[in-house]
Image (cartoon, one colour):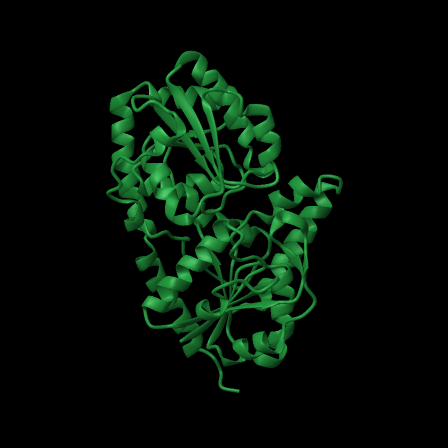
Length: 380
């Protein structure tokens, strides 16, 4: 099959959705399928080899997103020659895709990756919440009406989509990672290169540094942790709009290390060097960063949100924090770091849980869904 992946944002910008598209595309190619990625912005080295088509658009600052009005002929041709179209963003790509499909007549699947309602409230707080909810739900519902199938990464998302009035078929297929990449990493020079003692307790956050990720909560929590456990350190891997502000406020603390953005291939070494993964984000749907931590046999401390609780069971692979406050996170972090036996058991369970999210198995599930869609297509 030839699959056209449509996304508002793609490499070199790094986030969970771009990583998922790249991983899924790679796995599909290994299974013998052709994949085109249709996105926006200026061309990048390697686009032709990777089958990436970029369309003219205006950059929205450092966000990695663009404002575009149309697809080029090359992108339209790629969609026309595909067996189906897989849409990964509902707004820009969703609007342009549904317009293009009026003429192309291809099966359409949409993956709902994000809590768009929460993002809208975070970034458009000056607009009444009721109005924002109505706009988001209307957009998602309207797009889904054009889709043959909607993919929900977990049961919580499927339930939410039904509550929003989505009538299309919904298939639950989680996002995935290459679990083998995170296995068998021994000691590296990560701690030594950061000036962190080998016998310290190392906590890691890996992800975007933006307001919705609540990284400030983690830093305030670690300040409380270190007052009780002076051997504890926190490393923060990733970049984003809040990076400079957080660095200016916290980098002088001797227990904090800001790593910045690193290559995807370097992430396993940082996870392998750590003892515990933390995230205070409430907006996750099916976080790849959390899956990567689990595959690295790391216990986790996470906010008790629906996306997180679909992956992690409280007290098994880690702890879910119901009150997203620095004090609550600090208590959970200390609970795990101070108990070697508990940390060891959670580490084993984390590794076991991650196996359900391996990209090889998930890709085969996606292919089965694709084949079902194509077989049901009415010839034009």
